[in-house]
Length: 570
View 1 (cartoon, rainbow, N blue to C red):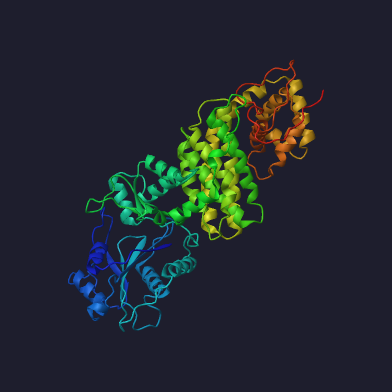
View 2 (cartoon, rainbow, N blue to C red):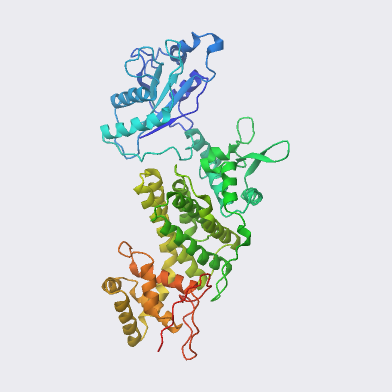
């Protein structure tokens, strides 16, 4: 059950007309009162002799009793309370009780207060009610509404328990504002896929992903195709900014502007500048060297895998401020991947980035400088372009999806351990979309590896099986039973042909994460071996040994880290 407090207004009868009217899409059915401050309150929905003006005068009476100088400019208070789609349809009596509990909890009409504000609850759909109240009490004083939104949320959690309804994940006040129903209906009329503020939030986050400074941020934001209006000081310095969707106008045909701080708490210009100040000189970092024929987008993804893997391990550490910085950095990596990916994975990556942005915010202050490596990686992804092609390019795409998926799962566990329910749920939703993207991207290269592995001569298969049994005796039976076994054997064969000590390489890959909870331990090892092959310098291969297969060799690529797996001595 979700309570939404709407903007305060000054037109009581206008809101009444909307609540009792057909709605913007004829969605209102049988509008009627379910409860009010006075049981004898006239109901224009059920009483043909009652009018909107009668209800308005009754609600506004305490306001009009005040001298004009003391009347509040915005005296109309409005909240909607909506049940979840899977909840049973509640009766009018149930909604009446819920309305009474809501106005009591928020301070509009505390229990036993005979001089409280006047209110009325209207139901025009099965799944929700609207409560309208006027913000002058019968004794002429104002109600105490401090933190009324948080108190409404707390009361709905109790209502859910009492009525056996779906338990909605509680928030902590760090979420971005939800679009109003009017904004959602307007988006439908304009043919937009989401409300303007949601689309703008995505545009701003994309422009911010890996941006080195304020100038680049605004240039990229303009390239996203949104309107930008900067608030300038007399000196010419930028004090703030606001953005608008092209074609989204108000009744006066003016653009509907949203300030960055309105889109999300971390998108105000001061917060963005703080991120830039902590991660300077992104331009000076070199990208990964080319080894094995990988393209620039592939090299950027290989380099990003290292930074993201570091973030994954940070979530298991005790430093919450560092972990929070890595959450922001992983969010930027996801935004960068979403805007540079094509094909079937694009939609899933976009959804993953959309959900994970909620997981990047909490009340824990980030140690901003710790997001440097991830911001640099996001920058490399954005500036290297779209990852296309086969061979190392395809491998890099699957590898980064595998690593980011593990990092997002770790982030979900980190949030859950700290009681950040909304963030944990958002990270889990992002992981679900990443898993789908990974499965789509990995299907072709894994199928090729599987086919090659099946054709390996028996002596070589037996040798690699013995290697796995020696290096991972506790996992060999599980690995042999998985569909990815032949693919793993093929990767080990390629590593051996390149001169690697396959037992040492396999043990190193297995040590990088626990495999007990992996859906496919063989898949995890395959991409870990690819990663190690790319990030460790391959030893000189004896001339008598053939080159590894061109599309799946785990030992092709750059070597940003100085660590070596010794070749097997024959």
